[in-house]
Image 1 (tube, rainbow, N blue to C red):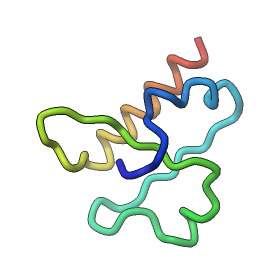
Image 2: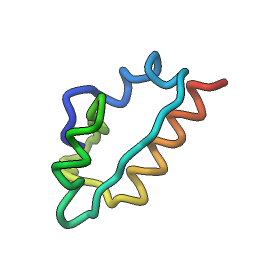
Image 3: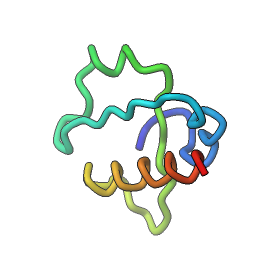
Image 4: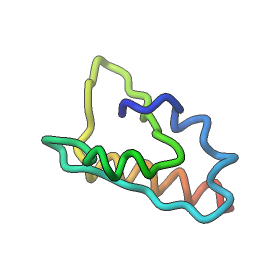
Length: 70
């Protein structure tokens, strides 16, 4: 949830092949993998939530990908 690009703004990037990388909930993505990413995405939340578990984050990102491909 800490990337500079909001998930709401990535739709133009999702109409080409996309690989999502997700790290462990306790430690995040290893630095060497994060360095390979073209973009880091932030998932906006409300209600003061500081984080999402990795399954919820993956589901949200994959849903956004499927919407962009329609």
